[in-house]
Amino acid sequence: MFTLGELNRQIVIIDNNNVEGGSSFNRTSHLTYDGVGSPTPQQVSIADASYLQKWSSSALSNFEPSITVSGSNTKVIIDMQHHLLQVTSTTDEVPFRIERKINSGAWVGGDIFWLPDAVARGFSPNRLLYVDVHGASAGDTIYYRFKNDGVSLGYSANLVHQWLGVVGSATYYGFAVLTEN
Image (tube, rainbow, N blue to C red; front, side):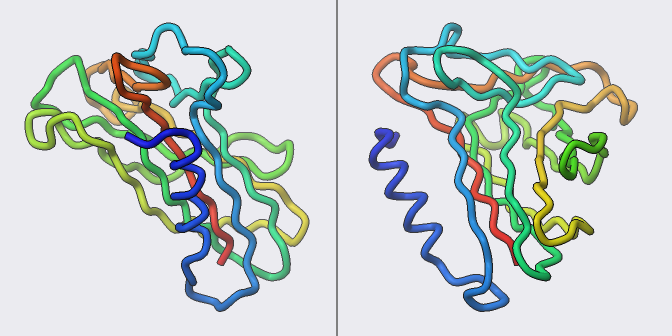
């Protein structure tokens, strides 16, 4: 596990990697735990139709990373890592839906990514690398959120635990790096 300072350095290293499209891009980094206080509970329950959470200024809220479009870039690369554990059934995958809104518009449901079952992967970080072709214009701000979305896809309701903050002797941070391209 990384300390907050080590994680910030890791994100800077990720941020310094070159991406397709050269150097005319914008990049933002977002953490799910700001290091202030210890979130209670450290194991946050994400029920079906609920969203990944962040801990900021001693309170939980939906994790909604954002980026402002500069120039004529038409895509955003989402590189995200979280500690998530499916607890309803350790042998079933869990679908998460990526939702997006542009500026103050409505949230729009997008693609699905699958959290692998706990038996297959054990307790390790989940990583998502996704390219969103957003349709926004220069100056628009794009927001993302991540929904536990099994029932709407015809699956049974499920419960996922998201680990945040200090858990025993370890500190868990989730993060998302958004890169314009």
